Amino acid sequence: MKIIKWKFGGIAPKIDKNISIAIGNFDGIHQGHVKLLETAKLNALENNLAFGVVTFDPHPRDFFSSGNSSFKLLDALEKENLLREIGVNYLIIIEFNEELKNCSANDFLSKILNETFKVTKMFAGSNFRFGKNREGTIEGNRNFASKLGLEIIAVDLKQTHSIKGKELEIISSQTIRKLIQDGQLNIANSLLGRNWCITGVVEQGKQQGREIGFPTANLDIKKFLKPPLGVYVTRLKITDQKELETSNDWLPSISNIGTRPTVSGDSINLETHVIDLNNENLDINLYGKRIKVELLEFLRSETKFNSLSDLKKQIELDTKMAYDFHKLNSL
Image (tube, rainbow, N blue to C red; front, top):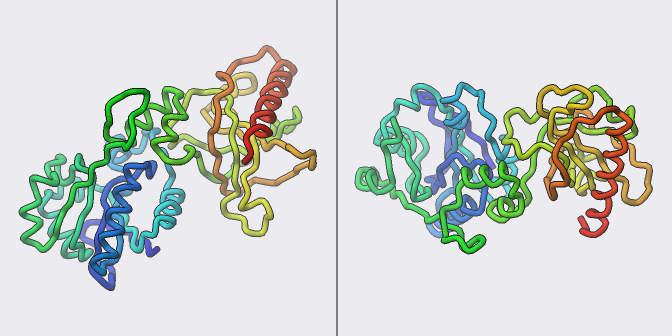
């Protein structure tokens, strides 16, 4: 997959052939996104076109909030990995800035998609909006695009099955965010088509977990969406260290998402402790490594304990519950 980063007014990249694209923010790469992507991919194959994705960085929501929002379901690298697995040839990341914000819908179609990137077919969700003040729509701009030789096609992103008797509704990142924030992980995961995960590079912490016998890998998650704070059964994968035998395997784990009120009460972090299921005396150094942590089951809300001794006793109980979960559910 070739990754092209471009901003308004930049030099046109070299692209070998015309492209069929899927366009959107693709935060989460959920089931609706996959349907959209597979539709564009099939069209590209049938018409001897390259298969591309056009997305934006920063996310428009981030741009308008001056980068202070915490809503992301995926980080950039995980999004790239998922798109690569789907079979994208070109990932075109357009910088969302003042120039792009003020670009009219017709200019976006003609000057950016058609002239700069040789797009001949554009696939988007039926509710996709683009251009200055979100003026552009699939139906409203279809005729203009057609005159450019650019066909724009709406894809129905409604879920293929109802949830708890509800009528079919469009699968959206916003719906999934709300489900995760409400603690409805199972439903959110069914719409994602996989377990929701948090990714990042492990930071050096205060090693307070190690002092009480539960060393943790710590991730800064300020840019990620926050589920209910508390303790979760999780599983962990090392994603960038080929020399480790465990790099392609899921490791059973338990995680706390919160402020660590008993010991510090500072910013929200994700702390993950790898569970030794087979008494192998695991001692994996995760500092500086990129990991993926999947949330599997909520155990309890975050609590402030009267002492480190009380905290350690509760962690032992939590770890036993997570141990039993992992033993019962093969990884």
